[in-house]
Length: 110
Length: 118
Image (cartoon, chains in turn purple, yellow):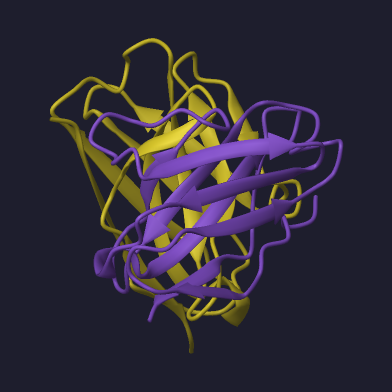
């Protein structure tokens, strides 16, 4: 069970859109529609932003959206705001009732 | 509103057993359809899923930690626990408990720091 692959960092200016990728295998991301995304500000607990690939929990702005193609899932943040600067982690169901996280991506708002 | 709070030993000696508890408030740990998870984050690194206990009592663990991990639930106290045996410095991390609703973790505790050192 290897960690999912995410870019170490991405950046964008306020108002722009950024996309964070999350690449796995057919045994995790590609095999199930159970990818979730978490936002983590420094010193804080992670917060669920997207679940089941593209669903948003109540209270999460619709600027956040998720998608998946093959073994790669993506999180897109549109209309970038300063408060979006944080670390983002993807997570996938990996079969046999197990989960695997990605290595995390640091989003910088320029 | 459901809240989770971790507690336990903040300093553990190498080769000993790490023990943490997650107290659940604002809801019942026996509610069907949920599982109760542990996740950790080494300093400056990413998240690692440790395992979870399902509302039925079934447990599921990260294969890389399975031989050292035990997750249990105390329904009378509305809490669940983590034990990690034979710890080394590599087990130093912030440990989070979380509720999983199907295949995502929707409510998290604030995390507790555990340091493994003699």
